[in-house]
Amino acid sequence: MSKIEDIVDTLENRISKVLHKQEVLKQTNAKLSEQLENYQKQVLEYQEQISEWSDRYETLKTANAMLGSDENKRETKLKINSLIRDIDHCIAQLSE
Image (cartoon, rainbow, N blue to C red):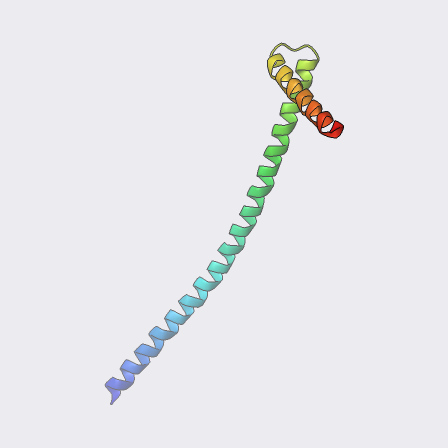
């Protein structure tokens, strides 16, 4: 009979240990999930900042070309021509 009690005690101890490990893993998982969510938010913020800085850089290149810089003159002319075509298209639609 004592063997059965020893086996039952051993099983109870093992089950207790497994349940404790499971609880620890749940807590760790919750912390990691929270960290992941925070990092994903940071990545989105960084992507928005990169997009904003890229737009600013393009605007600066255009402004430099208009001020006489020869580096981006061709790109600026193409962009201005594209804007003029868009405006002409809008005027044509309004005239109809």
